[in-house]
Length: 520
Image 1 (cartoon, rainbow, N blue to C red):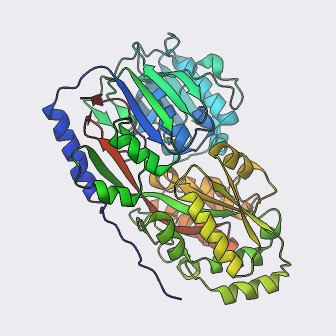
Image 2 (spheres, rainbow, N blue to C red; image 1 turned 60 degrees about the vertical axis):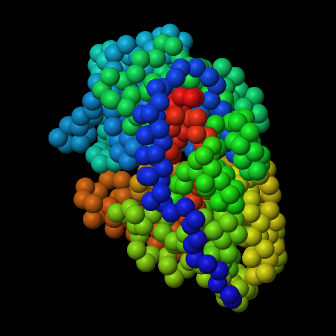
Image 3 (cartoon, rainbow, N blue to C red; image 1 turned 90 degrees about the horizontal axis):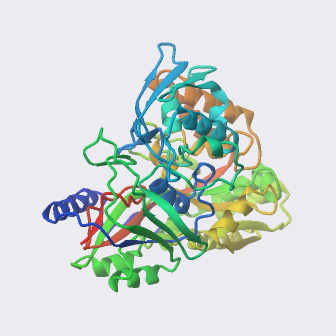
């Protein structure tokens, strides 16, 4: 088979720093101006604004401007205090104490106390997406209005990383909301913006919260913590799935920022004075999750046939227009947890003959395998279509089912009726080694088949004291994922973002921050 180019990037990753510096310099040259409506374009509709319960980028983009966390992540993804002023760990690693900022107001005017933080822990442990991590918590106590104590059943070295993850963030909510069920939460946070209006498939509108007091411990923007100053009056997050429509909106001044634009448009605009291109590489991992509990893909030999049939190079090249890189690892090569050669011999094989032999071994009779795809994410649907074509060429009866984001997620949560979920996983691998394994472990695993061996390895990954032991656990974890074919890695996606030049103070990050920016 003729191999395509491995990775072509018109905008190398190192350019991000220079672009951010240029934007910062432009900000210094112009005084930040109050007022205006910042229009942000995103590809898909948020399935919910209940941040605790969703890992979707469309939710996180909005929610992290409304809510805040006890401990957040800084510009380099390191845990730092946010609503907490400090946090400490006991010598035996079983007790964590958090001192809270005073005078913090919720959007309903209530002053935040440790009782609210306690209620936050309780709700997350009940309905939070990563609630399985909270099984190690023995007790949460508000020892006084500004102090929270969390006692663990056993030492968990990754505890602060877990509660500071913005993937499905443990955002602080009023204590009276602690009993609310999934999707029933009132959207009341402590952030610099508050919810005004949500029209599904159209837009979400936020307004500046005038009762917000920026964190005095910081001098400027620092990840999802830092000093958050809201200059604009309002922010409109507008859903616009069609990529060329987003580009046109930027060029006609109908919007100020787009979370993604096509590579061809970026090349055309690279010398523009009005629209600045901001590359983020790697942005996400393209991963297929296979249903190991139901249907034809419950047969391991069928899953191995899928694995060996995939030409990842072709999928990534076509779906990203060249803004990608091939890599077999479920941790990025830049990470100290990168898994080396594990899985390399099973990645990007494109061996249809071997796939057909495995199907014959499995006794496959042409049962339909449904591939779940998202119509509102620029790269997912092309990836699903190309995967289906490759599988058909290998003798698999594959059909793509395309839906909007909320339906796509709801279908994946069902145990039956689908065989392959094609998705982008952006924040989880960026945060470190603990995010992605949540998808394949615990009772709510996405492969729809509990794996006690994988669960035990994940416990080692989260609990071992030394880095070497945790690295070894990570290697064992992904060796099993590859062996059991719970997932098939396609590659690392890049993301090309764009902002109008009048948007001052904007710094690219995993989440668009509406604070610290103004419209000149």
